[in-house]
Structure formats: structure tokens, C-alpha cells
Length: 287
Image (cartoon, rainbow, N blue to C red):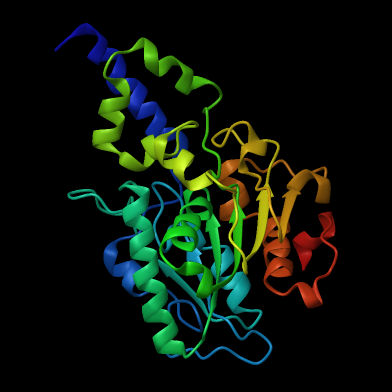
């Protein structure tokens, strides 16, 4: 092995670890048996109060259960029909998903939404995504006809304009073949590096598409999507929110904001039903 490869492989591992969801991994059997009462219950019919199913899209290294053990019950208890999918699976890699090419993951989301709309009878869905899961649906909206099927996209610490991982990615050119290695082993990571060809195409001509409402919820303490403002979108029907502007005492970083932060969850609920939104404050943790 060439000496630089001894450095590259740990670097690639660090990149993987930086975006990993660290909640306990669920088995495929557990995923199939995820709690119902609206969560992955395809018999759930949206109500007049909440007429659109909510699709939860996990982040890189996440899965349809672990990423949503907090938010899914939060929303189902409020009367939403909630669903979550696995996407971006790599052969021989169980539990940890969101690693395949982002374009292919968007195709999986497209197929899932079609199945969900057929089952529930809903014309449109709302999407809530964490990290890559907040960015990847934008490819579906822009290139796969998703704008006609989606009412709102809510990104929790989404990688909309990629990440420098605290300038760690700036080291890649100093290690010949590093980017090729990451692209081959974990394409989704390469796609999310700031300045990638995928992101250049996604963001060319504007961040948004007509007819969709966008909300971005970011945290100043994000150590994965850096700088944290790279999560923000520009365009019509966009609301960018910094978690600490809602509650200065909230210290959640990239994982916590998606896994268990009830202040962020409260703002998600506001974005899903803006007509009945209630001000989000530090006290929202009790609501």
C-alpha cells in the first residue's frame, strides 16, 4: 500500500464518522415493525386538520427508525400520518443508509412518495429531512417532478450547499486519490462536499422551485454542516431559522437537533401547519 493511502483511509473514516447518526442501530426487522398509529402505518388516512402525509427522510448513515425515534412520535401524537423510508443503501452495509449517490436516493424517494400517495389518497405530501435528508429531496423536486407532489420541504440542519467539515475537506487535494476513494466507497459523502459537481447542478439557477414552501432549521453549533449558514436557502417561500434565535440556551449540534430537540420539533410542527403556528421559545420543550 502506498504511504498516502495509510492517511487517506483514516481520513475517509473520519468523514464517515462526522456524519454518522450515533443512535443505536435498528435491525431490518425492527424497521419493518416500526411503531404505527400513523408512523409507517399505510392504513392511516390524513385528517381534515392534517390533510397531507408527512415523509421523514433520514440523514447520511441514518435509517428509517433510528433517526426518527423522537420526531415521529411527536408528530403522530399531534394527529399526523407519518412515514419514513430507507434510502441510499450500499451492498453489504446493513442498518446504515444514505450512502449511495444522492441522485439515485432521490429516485427512491420519488418512488416512495408515489406509493404513499396511492395508499393514502393524498394529492401531496410534506417532507421533513435531517442533514442529507433535507437536501436530497430538492433533487426530486427540481428534476423528478416532485414539485407537483410536495407541499412543503422542511430541512433540519440540511446540507443544502455542502459542507467543509470545519475546513477538513480542504485537505483532500493534498492526498492524491482521496476524493476518488471517497466517491467510490461512499458516493453520498462526495456529493455533499462543498463545491461538488452534484451540488453545483442542484443549486444552479436558484435554490428553490415554484409551488413548494421551504423551511430550514439550523444550529450555530453544527459541526457537520459547516459553515452552518450553508444550510440556508435563497428564494421565494423560504424561511431560514437559527435554533438559537428561538432559544439562546439551546446547545444542540448536528445530531441532537434532529434526534431529540423538542424546540426544533416545535418549529417543524409550525412549518407543517403555519396557519396554526405558535411562537417557539425555550418553553416549547414542554409542549
